[in-house]
Image (cartoon, rainbow, N blue to C red):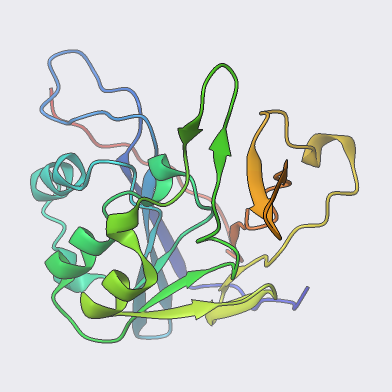
Length: 206
């Protein structure tokens, strides 16, 4: 993997996850979404990593934090599951710009489902198809390789299933040449950053 020069500053904001504080105005949801704001010299790049599964709840949380969708420069989708991707088209409409990079693995749009105890689709929903993403202003960049998305931040690309902790523990299925097969979730990518030091600050409103 390519060596990254460190960022001058990195801020990570949790926009959505499945818990909120007692009597909090924030809305929780099954799924996650993060905003990465990387600074290198005088340049700031804002990367939305995943979009949860409910864009209205996500946007509500962003409004409380005074984060404007129009400030987002690109989106990374870490894998196909609906609780990370549902509503990406709606988010692109809220961003309101053309050619917003949407970075993901080439297999992210494949069928992904479970059949235990019944058939249930858990991948990207039809409303968030390739065509709809592009119509909403997204510009897909689909790659199996690591990708530097700004100086100091990159994606891992496809991760080999070569150690025990990389095994897929959920009985996920996909199709290939008209046959059902186990899905190894090879589209599962991560975002990594190089930073000089760590400083944690939490903010919330009760």
